[in-house]
Length: 424
Image 1 (tube, rainbow, N blue to C red):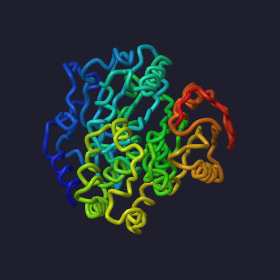
Image 2 (image 1 turned 60 degrees about the vertical axis):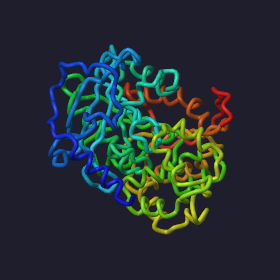
Image 3 (image 1 turned 180 degrees about the vertical axis):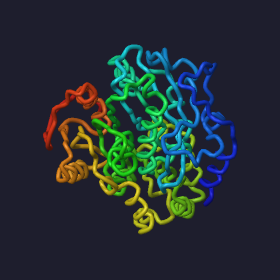
Image 4 (image 1 turned 60 degrees about the horizontal axis):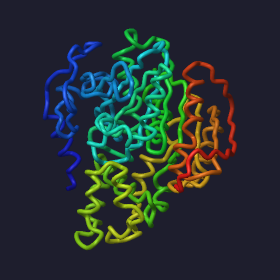
C-alpha cells in the first residue's frame, strides 16, 4: 500500500499518449452519457505533458451530455491542463468552463466546490451530472453567476488523484485553471481586460484561499481582483480535535488522511500501519470512503469516534512527522500574502474550526495591509453559513467583477443573518 499513489500516477501517465486538440472551438460535440473519470481516457494527460508550462492546455472538449441546458449556459467545456502538485512536481488537472448566453466578456468567476473526498469520480466535472436537486447552492450559484453574464470556471482542484487536503496542490490547480482558461479563450471569447474573482466555501475556501496566497509567487502574471472565502479552514491541525469524537463531520478525517496519502508517502505508510485490520472499526470500513462523495461519507461516518479506527487511538494525531506534514500543507498564511481584496464570512459557532482561527488569519493579513471585509455571523453553524452568507458573497463579487468595489483597510464586524433553519 505504501506505493499506491505512485502506482496510480504511473498508470495515469502511461494510459494514453494521444496529443491534445488546441482549437479554440472544438467542432465535435461530445455525445452521450459521460464516463466516470476513472474509466474515461480523456482524463489522462498526453505524452510529454510534464514538459509543458503550468496552465498550458493539454486537451479540450465540449462537455458531454446536457450541461448547457442544466445550467442554462451557451457552452460548457472540459479543459485538461498542466499544473503542479503539492510537492512542486509536474501534475495536471481538469476544469469546466461555463459560458453565459449573454455577457460582455469582462467577468470570470473561478468557483471552487467543496467536494472534499478522495474519490476522483466525485470531481465536479463529473459530479455535475447528478440531478440538479442534489446540487443545492452549487447549482444556483453557477446558474446565478451565468445569468449575470459571468463566465464560470470550476476546477477539479484536487487533481487526478483526488488529493483532498493537499492544500498547495489545490491552490496551484485553481490558479492554473484560470491560466488555462485565459490561454484558451482570451482574445477570442474573453477580453484582455477581463476581471477575475475567486469564490469558495468550506473546502472550496481552502482551494480559493491557497490560490490567493500562492498567486504572488506561483502565478505573478495573473491579476485577480477579489476573493470571497466562506467557512474558512485556516489549518487542519487545529480542526482535527473538532472532528474525531462524535462529530457530524467525522468523514473529513478519512477524506483528509487518504487525500494527503496520495502525495505524502509517510501519511500513507502511517495510516496503513495504524488502522485496525478487524473489528467494528477496521481498515476496510475506513478505506470505503474512497468510493463515496462527501454527502454519502457524512451520512456514513456521522457521529463516529474516529480514533477507534487506530491502534494507538487518540495518540495517532500526536505523531510529530504527521503534524509537521499537516502544518506544511495546511496552515494558511505561510506561503504568501493575498494581493487582492478579500471578503471573509464565518459563523461564530462553526463546528469544524473555531472562529478564533479565522480571526487570527484575518488579523495576520490585515497587518500585512490586505483589504478585508470580515463578517462573523452570530447565527447558525458551518452548514448554515453556506446559505446565510451566499447572497452577501454574491453581491460583493458583483462589485468586484463590475469594477465598482470600494473597499480599503480592514473591517471586522458581527452580523446576525438567518436565511436557513439548519441546526448545523
